[in-house]
Structures are given as C-alpha cells and as structure tokens.
Picture 1 (tube, rainbow, N blue to C red):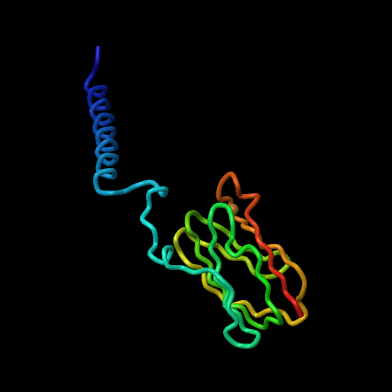
Picture 2 (picture 1 turned 45 degrees about the vertical axis):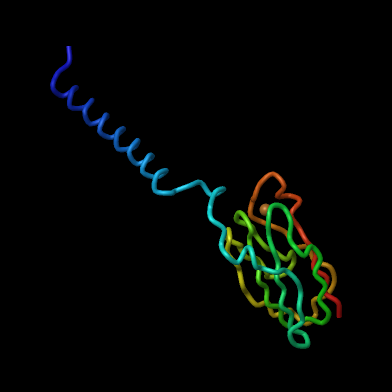
Length: 150
Ligand SMILES: [Cu+2]
C-alpha cells in the first residue's frame, strides 16, 4: 500500500533522474567532450623549440613538454645571466622544475608558460629538469638536463 508521501517522493526522484539524463545528453550534443578530444591550442602547431642567445648572457629557451619528454632534452648555456623560458604543453598538465634552483612552474595543457629566470652568478654544473606533475604512466621518465658552463 502506497501513501501520498511515497508517491510524491517517487515523483521527485524521477524528476531528478530525468534532469541528470537531460544534462548528460545536453552535454554531449552541445560539444562538451573529455580532455582527450579537446581542440588544440593554435600555438601547438607552430611552436618551435630551441635555445637562442638573444644578447650576450641572455638566452631564450623554448621547450615543448609532452608525454613523456622535454624537447630539447639537453640545454647547454654558456655564462647565462638571464634566461627567458617559454614552455608549451602539447597534451596534459606538466611540471617544469630545475632541481636545486628556484625554478618550478606548472605548464597547463595547450598553454605556454613564459617566465624569466635570473641565473645566480655562482651557479654552474649539471642540473636535472623534472616534470613534477603526474602526467601518466611514463611520468617518472620525463626529465631533461640543464648544463651551465662558466
Ligand atoms: Cu609528468
């Protein structure tokens, strides 16, 4: 035997479930998609990685971060004073940390992280660059090397 209260409760549940189904269908029909199918930020196709010395001691370093590598994987800087980094993620969220320095940034999917690093004058040697945002199965293998020569 069902009473009035029970019937109205069932009606409310059906209304809520209908709304969820409607919202789901609405999402797929107006173009919401999971991140794997996101449209690619235009710069991804034109971005060129590399190291350029734009003035004596001032470098522009352009890096692609993608599953599971940095391109270029070895960066050699001779007597750097200032480094302008431009790092682009080609897929998911990545991190860019130069171990032992104060460089540590997030690289958002399809976006470019741009920042300037004033290199301490006493800094030299080999430094490991790691991705410190979990980006998938190959994440532990995602690293590069920075070599500073004085
Ligand atoms: Cu990673």
